[in-house]
Length: 230
Image 1 (cartoon, rainbow, N blue to C red):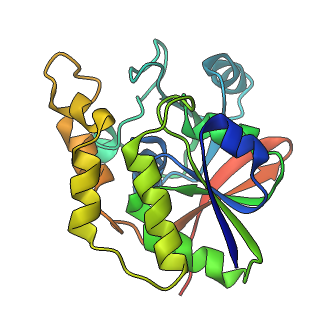
Image 2 (tube, rainbow, N blue to C red):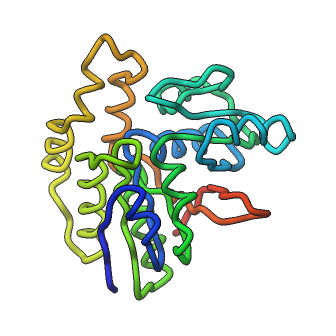
């Protein structure tokens, strides 16, 4: 298995083979919780204007996402797993727009198949990848808004690579490295309530969900749904 670790929007654009778009803080952690809360599927779009248009056309029920970490005006939920804990999303179609994860997905035009990656679904994602017996895997750490590398996504990419190659990293060491990173510090600042500490805690809860986030193209839309393997 040839495994390439790359980063940012450029990495997504050049990705080939089975591709994992990684966004730990918080896109694909939030998606995992949304499916736990009963969401039927999630449509991923790059821009919030696209999200509004799709909802207006009756394509989806709920708008979820962020710009600059904040919930856009008119959205139902932000890009926060903690915010979703009390939500009833059973049977709902969510339209999601973020500045890194969903942008990475929509730019991965050369990928054979896409998964959404985070620590919350790490082992499940590796099981899903191995089930395809792929010759080529690309792990893309999306970073901050797809333009600045971020420790949590880079570490998640390395964590996934190690698992794919049969090594089991020290979970606490991985968490420690992420906690020391710049992006992590936002969750300790009372002046940035759009980044609650609970979101970081949930994002660092490795393997909290036992399904992968498989993203397919249906009718021109990027659709995320949970994939559970025995």
